[in-house]
Image 1 (tube, rainbow, N blue to C red):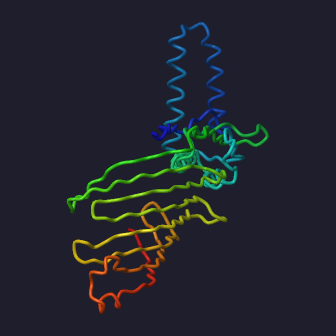
Image 2 (cartoon, rainbow, N blue to C red):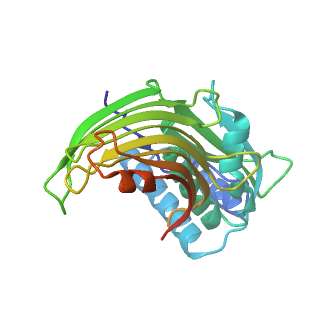
Image 3 (cartoon, rainbow, N blue to C red):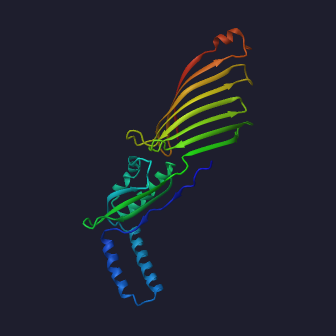
Length: 281
């Protein structure tokens, strides 16, 4: 089942209740005087005025304050999740900062993989509060929360292939949660079954939390008669775009099911716990 294509919309500026709005209003009065002109001339003048307005936004610090952030379109996703992802919008103090924050918020919402599209619109605030703006976040939730993938992957450093299959279900409880189960088997007689969950926000934490339960089995027929099994839990404690901190706890067992090894070696086979901290940079 193919994953729905995400449509990322850039923030749309409708209007702003600030000093530039007054400037636009004064200029719009001139349009009434140009009613006798042909439509093409009127369009050209209006286009030039808006180009000058947006050029000023880019090169000057036009002050603005976000009055409210309105969320629309979410039927299953909790408002608290979207509010947490859009909190940076209220920190913007200029139109340029607000446009940049809107683009960043759109990227983060799309990265949750639970929306087919995200559109952010900037509108004027209440008339009694000049210099303010309302931000409208309009989302379209994905129509296909269930996703399945299967494939064969070749290892570049070894002449072996791996067959992998994954089944994912998105946003079951409305918190942006992603649940998945996977199976993998390669030609080196290594098999793995795992199930996990990903939470973008957990009890106010600013970083996503992941948990995965796994069962691995591998024999070493090329080198010995031993077979290794691992049952463990992996916890993602900290995650950013560039860094991850993962804690792995596993119970590992070595056995000799064929009983080809000598008795002294079999007696040396044992089980043990492993504790591993992984830092991905």
